[in-house]
Length: 131
Length: 350
Image (tube, rainbow over all chains, first blue to last red; front, side, top):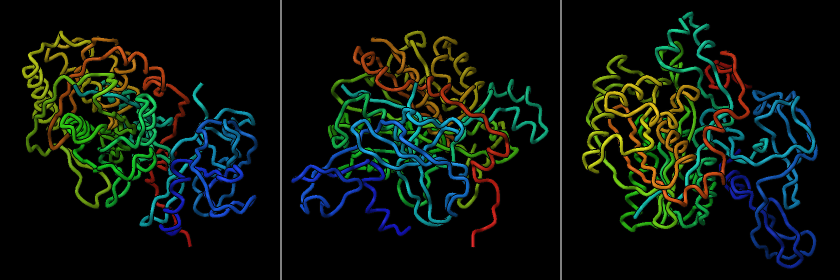
């Protein structure tokens, strides 16, 4: 990935920053320039809760080249406590122990890297909430 | 008065047992376990590094402190395993916790004492009034060469501390530093693994500096060993800190709570800071705490803290360090450990 593209995604990747349309209140994650509901261009910062539960998931056994060393791994849709949904890798749990409805929290992890010499890309993954 | 206003730790879920490493190299596991006082060590997952663990520890520190991260005016990450050779870890950590852009940051390196260097500077910046809050993180995903004695102990973990002047959890009573040029452990540029001076890492290195620093800070503070409820020494293995404690008149009970190394390994820059975090998890108002780090090269930083009533209010706001030590553990085979640490030569993708 280009460093420029990664850099633009940092607020969403690092801090789960979402943006709320000032006009109609619709929340976007990541940020958009124009609200697709009311066409407003004015937004205010909003944050996802870093806690949520697993709505659904799939186990990736044949991953894209950059993720092949992590297979099998789990990708799921996480519903945060404030109702927002996002797709994330589910880490720190074996695929056979993943269950719909399980409580999760967002953790800061290494997502990918551009070869051995390129930029390291960090972001969020969901991991089991402490019991 | 300056002190710790927030703290937190992080460590990976993976462990590799001493027996697993010993079997690979045909060495005597019981002898290593006795000699080092180690049972197992933590291993980072492929998606964890010094930066990710620093961020997790820093977030726990912020939640315990209950402060606005925008008020953190300085942030220092001490490590000998910064993910980039050139590009600071501190900028990534500061961005992730929301402390940018009005924040001074630097990465420190000093073998195993890079974390306490950050604590020293952060606390003094707050004391001088230059910044309201300053954060110091000690973190490492340390490496030992395959088959080397260090492979049994080199582990991963992080601890973060926020220093401030209000709502203090542990007052900083005294600091002291002791160092000389002693080549007991080093890694040259472009080398994968560090080298060390074997037994030379003991008497003229660890013990001289750690004991020199301890005696120096006790003298400076006009304190005696029995004045402390808890004592945390750098812990490259379990034997060294226990021996140092005995030599200087500290009891087993004083060092027990902060001695994480038997089940954690040596987390290098995270080592004594993580021990301190485990002590802060249980300390009560009025308890005096002595922490002395050690970094090869060589030197020690000493700190004396006194726990306040406020500490007890925030201890359970976040997970305790000893809880993390036992939580969701996963034991790796030596092969998995090699894979996770990137020690296997793979065929390059087309």
